[in-house]
Image 1 (cartoon, helix red, strand yellow):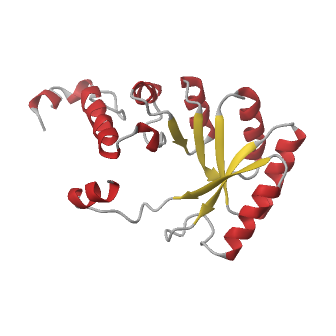
Image 2 (cartoon, one colour):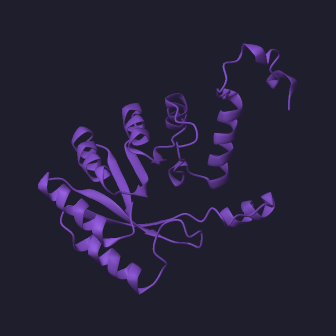
Amino acid sequence: MDACYQIDDTSQIISPGMIIFKDLLEDNLRKMIELIGDPSRLRPHCKTHKMREIIQLELSLGILKHKAATFAEAEMLADTGVKDICLAYNLVGPNIARAVEFRKRWPDVSLQVTADHPGPIELLGEAMSAAGLEIEVLLDLNTGQNRTGLPPGENAVELYQMIANTPGLIAAGLHAYDGQNHQVDINEREIAVK
């Protein structure tokens, strides 16, 4: 690493802590945009950094869509000015009420949530309808990582139809995370995205 990024006295740094070299971060973001050609194709996940300053930098570069793992992260995104948020975990229990409260507090923010089971879909639809609201729901597909989602097939089609037919819900498409699949070779990645 370049000498200008070396830390002279680590004893003066509060630990644990995060150190960010803004110019490197901005350069990486610009390279991502250059690689895919359009910042609208990006939806970075804030769960790693959870920092308004990074969100503001991404917004300034035209990265307008973001992903969150928790309502606390989604609320931070909305407070920072993000208008398109995907909450990438299936809502159960108290999070259904939090979704209603989120939609009331930020009516101008597009909030998408994921679902992979009929029970929470039904409860979310009932809660949204009772509040006179709607929410976008993405069907969560299992792409082989076996963490969340339904495998593609007839059950997934039926569940998507349930989302589409449930008052208070808007069927907004599919959510699939295939982080287990990647291309290590940079040349292969560049060819794949063109």
